[in-house]
Amino acid sequence: MFFDPDFCKVGLMNFRNVFQHLYVLHLEICYDTKLPDTIGCLYHLKFLRLSGVRELPSSIGNLKNLQILIVDAYSCQLPPETTDLINLRHLDAPYLKPLKRISKLTSLQVLKDIHCDQWKDVDPFDLVNLRELTMSDINIYYSLNNIGSLKNISTLCLWCELDGSFPALEFLKSCQKLHKLWLYGGIEKLPLSDPFPNSITMVILENSKLKEDPMPILGMLPNLRNLKLLVAYEGKEIICGDNSFNQLEFLRLHYLPNLEIWHLATSAIPLIKDLDICRCPKLKEIPQRMNDVERYSKPLKRISKLTSLQVLRGIYCDQWKDIDPVDLVNLQELAMFGIKKSYSLNNIGSLKNLSTLKLSCYSEESFPALEFLSSCQKLHKLWLFGRIEKLPLSDSFPNSITIILLSESKLKEDPMPILGILPNLRNLELFTAYEGKKITCSDNSFNQLEFLRLNFLSNLEKWHLAASAIPLIKDLHIYECPKLKEIPQRMKDVERLKIRS
Image (cartoon, rainbow, N blue to C red; front, side, top):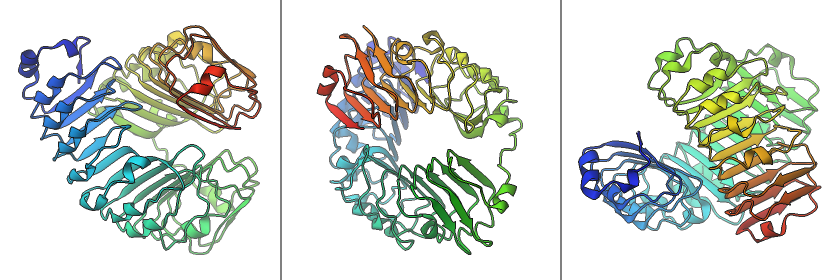
């Protein structure tokens, strides 16, 4: 990793001398700084990760040995020359303009953050090595049938646009090597079990809002081991019939607000190891046999020995609390669950290279003090899922933060005066995060904010917006804020505006 505020001033000859034989480069530079053309001189590069870069120069096409390209940004511009990277195997970049001739990248194994309107004109037949695909902004009018041509696809993540629904999903039956399937968005009707390949081991359905019980169909998948339903079903009962879910080990039922009854046959789900039920307020009781399931949360002893660890996801707080993280000097991403108010998270502040942090509270629990965040000086992305009794002052947030997502925070005080001071915040998402009646964005607040989501703020009535606040806004989504009387006039002119009450 290379940190230098004057990096982009490095001369051509000096640039070649310093980095000539470099194979791996993780470059973090000031947000919106233009990457110099001289990046194309690093002919030996195989791995390139860029943070703070919005536009890549055409010289990137000279990196014929490059195998992995990752751009950490909410959106970026990739030049047409990107398709000249004939050895590229992994492309993770949320680029906006379509890349023509992407099918030339025949070595590609992982493609993330492609938009549906970019994919629809792609001929995937030449992408014979593609194993992982993440696509966003899908709507019901697009056809996804050409995904069925990806014969080696094993991981598929598909996201609908806001309030969107999926088109027909029958193409899945052609993906005979598919293991992991994540569908985020409305599904009018789940296809019969036949369209799902028998190879599937993991299914995540999120925001599907199904009207019919999905369990009879999903329960027939012979190798399904992990199932998560999050805002996926609007009915009152689920039925797991005889001999269903024969291989299922992990089950998550989250945010099923109407669920009242769970019928479980004697022979159903025989191998269950981990059951997590969250925010299903009307569920009267769980089947007796499920009461005996133990959450798999054994502490990971000596995890600090993994000094090369860069990403740690899915760890529970009671596993983490006894860990000394000082030796985890390379950890850049941490996702932790099961947090309780009685726990201390202060040792997270010892992770000096942490750039992404996702923390989720145990059901109905609140976060403990969050002042430790002030020690995470390289933190870019922060996701907090759970109650926050009081948001810490802006001094507790590092200036490096560019993305914040607050979900189920249920704050009593307006968070905008504190969040608006963060100098580099570009993306803010609030989901059931505030219970008050008004938000105030004062003068010179949110100077860098480009993307704003206000979702499920059920009491919000007024939005006060100063003339100099949020000057760079590009994308505004307001969803399920039924009492909001009107949005500020200037927000009505935002380039991408979506409102649903």
